[in-house]
Image 1 (cartoon, rainbow, N blue to C red):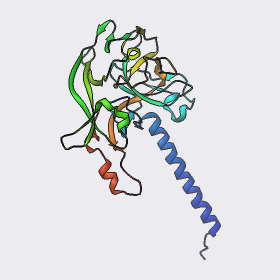
Image 2 (image 1 turned 90 degrees about the vertical axis):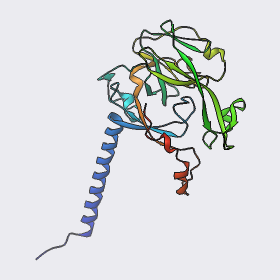
Image 3 (image 1 turned 60 degrees about the horizontal axis):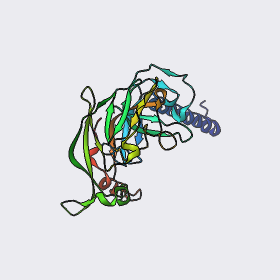
Image 4 (image 1 turned 30 degrees about the horizontal axis):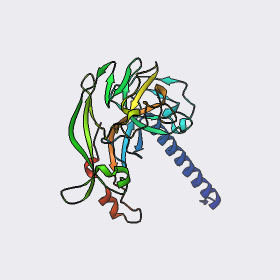
Length: 271
């Protein structure tokens, strides 16, 4: 004669299965984010023109090895740095800034251990040689909810051909030794940022700069104004591709605005 399973036991079994599933899912996400890919969102304009506020990108975690900063919240489970590999000049990397204001930041690698770096009248010098800086077409970014007029600055505000408010910045192309090139913004002369002492990058560290040279707290400045040299073990990964971008006009309670706010042309843009 068949017997039925008591309701209490069935409920307990289902609860265990649910907890087991959630544990496996959490472990999968932990491994994925720590060792393979992790998402990163752009909160500021320091990497204009390549990255806009509201861009979302994937960061690959294996390029430079692993350290405690590869793990969520900087869990101290990895001693030092394993499977280590140095970045290449020009790489765009996500790293954990130094204490006390430690958080994830994105910048471009300019100097490696032993390099000397200096800015002279807004031009970058690497190991005593001027890095070519070519004036190119102005960079134009629309005024949107996540890039407002106050971020643009009065002197750079303009209107587009269809009479929409835009921000127009002077734009340049820098080319590093070996041919790696990228675009930078240089809006005006700021002595502390554009005329600097010579920096010599210590062993085990990198020198990082934002592409928006007049609005980036980077290795040109010592903490707390900037971040100084960044130890290699604090590099979390390499930016590889934009997977989403929004101008900030979307509202969660209005799903149709998710489509209208998307900057579709930026999705899939690589580094």
